[in-house]
Length: 371
Image 1 (tube, rainbow, N blue to C red):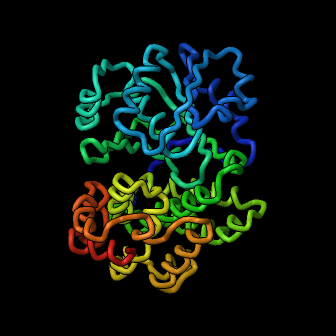
Image 2 (tube, one colour):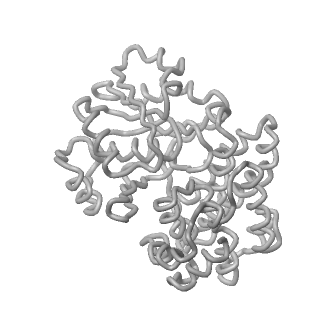
Image 3 (cartoon, one colour):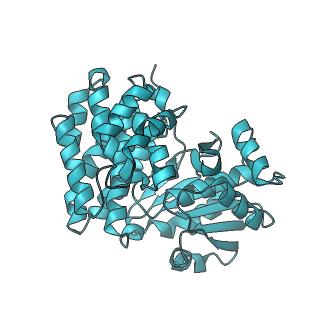
């Protein structure tokens, strides 16, 4: 039985951030306290905030990529007394993850980092004390339309997830103008991350007809315009923003699969940017999954390829032309570490969502294929 649900009010297009004052009014905030969380000062200085004269704003810059439990606890401590009614998260996936996580933490007495870990593991968040609005400045995560957040815990060799179906964003403002200053490396790796979201949603065990339709549209839009992004052509960022949003809507109902599961330890232990790590894995995972993928010809057509070998060539070209490595060897991964990394790549909720069963053995083979 197919079932799809996503309650996020989504506004996409140039200048959509200017809809923020009206959205905050529509939320009817009791205390009119809003935390604005931004990747850098420039994001917090947007003219739209001058229009919020009747709102009590606290602006906080958060610059860490792949936020850790310790960093989340620190910003919770810094902002908990302000007790916002709403959080506006402006940035990439890391900002979204922190912003939506805070909504689940406010109103609770969390005395230490270990207490935060226990809360995350228990999943007993209750009703979020604040609502949030997502404003992506990169086109890759789709986090503005999902209800889960990734929080890293390298000291415990773990990736954690804060998830609550009551914690979807009130709204997402997908404004491509905010992505125009992105470095090319980040723009390309973000776009390829969105492709992975869509592809994995398409073949996930939890897929449905709505998610598959959204996924195909997302893959087609991004892959068709990646050359424009590399050539700095007008309209490329708008296409990436659309594709990322559609991919987010797709995997908001299905979650991801093998590519994401295997990529997490590559990012945690070797600092390989998430988009690069997950995109390198797409081709070998496609080769493994192909016999079990319903509607495979439609997916290949959207990707603009005929098989996994051609997909590897396309992704390698995009990564190299944007100035980043396309193999684990070039990223500094030691080949003797691959079996250990394979063991860490069995992420619950992702590995078991893949149409082909993952084992340490076939994950090791996949990692060797991109070494």
